[in-house]
Picture (tube, rainbow, N blue to C red):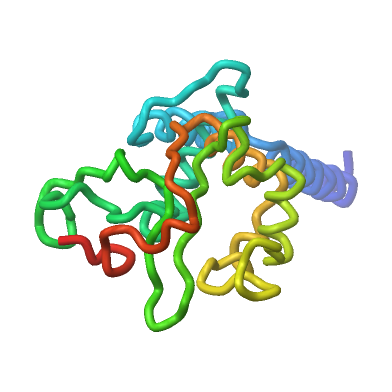
Length: 202
């Protein structure tokens, strides 16, 4: 083999190795750090941080766990929908051991003075639907901010412009979780609960 042919063969081998390495790197990882692994760990963490007993009957367990992770670990829903957010004397913002107010968990009643707005009860109604909403109603509300039961055509205070960017799977998980939490009979018409605002319950 001449020197020229040998150099051409080595160059071809080198290029082939680079292409093979590129293809290997392009294959999705299946290790625990992959998206599926992260999803599994989020589901487990969601169950670990759920502050209330969950009714899993007829529910998709994986969606409930993921929904809990989003609601309790990312979206901070309890800060505005639980009044007060923490059991009195157990606010971490006051240096105390955190204890979620499970008696009022996600039952609304947080006032947003000086506006007339009060957070809504998003626990399941008598039919098991969170805030009385079907999933289609819930998705529409989050995607558009339109709530026929509100004071204005579009939700105020509620950060729906951010939440609407979530994918369909995550919104379904949130809804499934909210369907699994205990129902609370508090009516939105009851007005503000016994707190002055989100996270101001010392």
